Each structure stands twice: as structure tokens, then as C-alpha cells.
Amino acid sequence: MARPASRRRPAPGGPFDRFAGGFEHLSLTPGRGALILAAVMAGLTALHTWVPAARSWLAVGPNTLSDLQLTAIATNGLIARPASAIGLLILVAVAGLLFADRVRHWWHHDRVRLIGGAAVGLLVLMFLQAYVLPGRAYGLVVGGAWLVFVGTAVERRWGMRRLLIFCVTIMLATNLLGACLSWLWPGGLGALLTDGMLPLFGENPVTHALMAVWCFMNARRRMALLRVEARALVWVLVAFDALDLLFGGAIAGLMGLSAIGLTWLLITGNHRPGVVIDKLRLWRIERRVERRRAGIRVVGGRDHLHRGACRFAWRGRSVSGTT
Image (cartoon, rainbow, N blue to C red; front, side):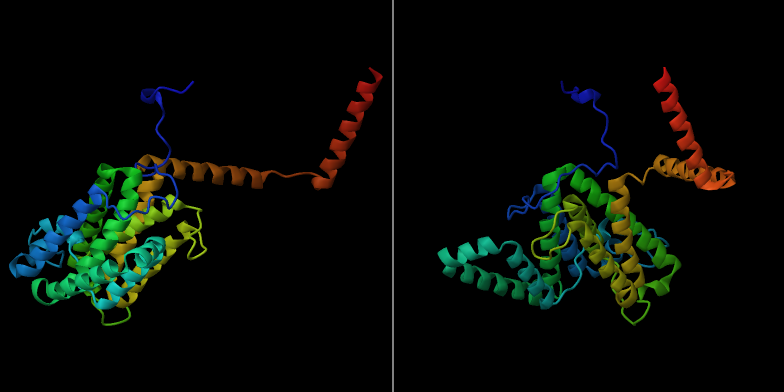
């Protein structure tokens, strides 16, 4: 008989660990939570582009904490970075691979509409890039598309509320880290090995966090395109952020790495102090047991103990046979 829902014990792990694996959640229909994130991102990006006086209140910088411009900690993670047409082409290529069956179906049954829609969309995007959001339209489309795509995949497992709570948690934590580091370490705005200087604003931390959740969702499932387990792709995200650290911007790279690390902590439950304390106690107990084992001396060695055990067993069978 099933246990009542009110008496069930909570599942182990963190508050964001309840999901199932599978790629069947890939869909062209976006989730409501993902659309909310994309809409907020479009509004903040437009405001950051059109109102230069508001930029310091929207994006994290060295003066965020000193000038008490704390609204940037909440908005910094949903401002699109400038991007080139190469990023747009990569997005189109990835979408074509993931939805190859549907693209093939449209190509065979409605080729004119597919080509016409792509051409119109490209012209509108070029107009936005040149006149409406100078230098930001490509970045908004690329960042928003990744956010909606991965956010929808996660939302179908967690629900809208848990998705939004997770994204807000990641953004507040990473933006606060970026504000503190840029205040205490202004030189960290540049890269460690080059003269590159990525802006601290951008959707990269929250997008990488959602991608990490997606990889943990599918765990040991192998992706058909890459022939690797989905969880192994987390290290690809780590590599991208490490490259930002070395060649793009040190603080920007650390913000991305911290987003992935915080995702792991939230999913596994290791963010709770009680779990850490229990693990430390277990580690101390294991060390104590090892020290006691090291102090035990065995007279005669293992062969002596083996021979004694064999004689004892033989005598026991003899006695049982006589009785």
C-alpha cells in the first residue's frame, strides 16, 4: 500500500534534484517560465541600450557596491551581450541538428514557406541590429533562444515556479560575486593571459547553469550526436568558462564557473551546512578508525591466522561428527 503523500519522506539531495532523464522534452513550444525570462531579458537589454544613464544601475561594475547601485545585482544576469553573426549561425546549426526531422518535414512539404520565413526573419533581424538595437539584436536573439530552449527543457521537469526560483538564485549569487570581485580586484576585469575584457553583464552564468541542470537530468544517457554521456558535457561548460577566465575576462569566467558549482551544490544538497558538517564528522571517524587499524599488530602474519582458522574449523567438524 502506498504511503500517504503527507507522510512521505523528502527525497535525498537538494531542493532541485527531482527530475527524470530523457530527451523527449525537446519541443518547439516554449514554457511560460522560459518566456518570462526571455521577455525580461528583452526589456532590460533595450533599456541598457537606449538609456546610457541607467547602465550603471542595470549592469554590475566596480562602483556597484561603493555607489550603492544595488539594483544591478538583480538585473545584471538578464542583459544580452553583443554578438556577431557567427553566433547566430552556430545557433541555427545546432537547432537544425536537434530538430532535423521537423526541418526535413518542412523542406519536403512546405519548402516555399520555410525559405520565405527564414529570409524575412533574417531581414528583420538585420534591421533591428542596425537601427533598433545597435550591436545587440544578434546577441539578444542568440542569448534569448538558448535561454528559452534550455529553460523550457528544465521547466518541463521542474515546473515554472522552481525554474524561476533557481534562475533568480543563480543570478543573485553570481552577480553579487561579480560586484564584490570588481570592487576589490579591478584588474580582474581583464583576462589573465590576454588583453581581453568581457563585460560582466550577460546571460552566460544562468544559461550555463541551466545547461548543467540539463546535463544532470540526462545523467548517463548518451547523446546521439556526440556519443557521450550527457553528464560529461558539464566539463565542456567548465572549459568554456575557463577559456573566458584566461582569454576573455577573469571575473566573467569566475562568475560562470561559480554558476556551475552552485548548480551542483543545489542539486546534490551540499549547500546545506548540516550536510557538510556530517561529511566532516564521517571523515574524522574514518581517519580515527584507520589510525586504530594501523596500531593493531598481528603475531605470526596472515599465514599464521589462516592456519589457525583452518585447524579450528577442522576440529569443529570433528567434534560435530562425533556427536
